[in-house]
Image (cartoon, rainbow, N blue to C red; front, side, top):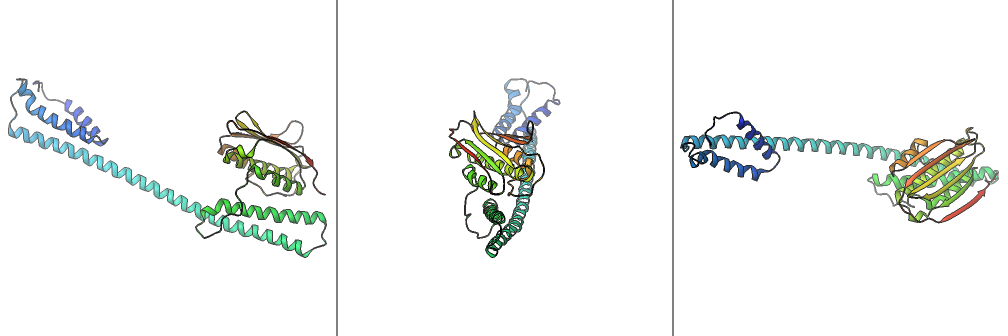
Length: 317
């Protein structure tokens, strides 16, 4: 409009205009397009720096701007379609992964549920048929029957939601620290001498932390039953600051014993994953002098506590 020679400065205008259209600011792009068209045609003449544009020049400029806008719109449409295709592909992949997980969950549920049911059934049959068995054998069979039945209920509670069949509701909710007494009693029935010190109110804990703490204690007591000799464990649960501290230690020599309790995870890696799932940490290793110690710190914030200490109870011979 000021009469300077034309040049590559128009490339900057084209790039900027294309960016505005592609990013979705179409009204601003159309407004600038109209103002630019009028400016190119009449601003030079209004400033007395150029002659007014003729009809041919006006039509050529309109055609060029139309092509520019159409090209930018096609570019935006193609980009949107590519993004939509990518989202659809990602959704399809997620559905496939979900279907695979569902199939695995169903298979796991069916296989494990069948095995646990068979274990419980056979233990019950043995208890019913042999009325003169030794007390220790009867206690062991009763522990097997009870533990397998409870494990079956928990398995259905966890995996039942993934199964698309008409199953009844679980008989009991997933365990937390409120079921710690039953867990300790099962450990004692399996031959583990357990001392429990509870300095936290399970009702005041967040549900994920409550469940993670229970599973960590369950797995740690299982390891004591398997590995410690003698099987003596001390469990301490307390609130320290903003953390729930779960400590399970034993005084065993490390010599492996028979598997006696159902496991709540995959050993130490499973316990670490439980702690990490709620933002906590877990350390596990040999204790000073003798034995093994597991200590987990699970963040809970400010939580009221209530103390309770159980004296050690020797397992029945």
